[in-house]
Image (cartoon, rainbow, N blue to C red; front, side):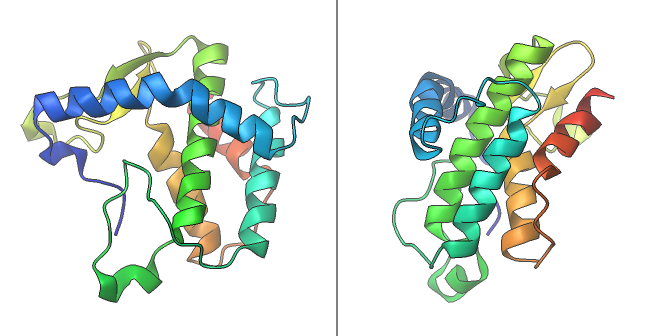
Length: 173
């Protein structure tokens, strides 16, 4: 199952998820820093996305199925579909990487957190989801990171250490 359909949330539920996501970002960033063993290259520069994605790819190659708690942005799969999703441990890593990607966008481009919101007739893909935006860019870091993880973990795409950096560059050019 893909990430949660935030468009189905009430305004109150969207606000609660948003506040929780933003408030816990420092914890996720610290957890990532610890997992990457305090790599000094984690300086929130766009180039540091290569270090983070290499870490993710290394864990993905050596990972088993890994059960456990799913991130709050992911809907639990029906039991019969569980084998067709990324393992819970991978999804937790996606959560860490997404927090880092968000911080890179925020620090380097001056993006601000907001709740994605457009009129229903627009069929906006990130309705009610936490997004980073300014007057020209709007990005939902969880979907970006999850999409890259699916390419590698489920679709058999070639692991590319600079994939996250290239994705970042695509947003800013």
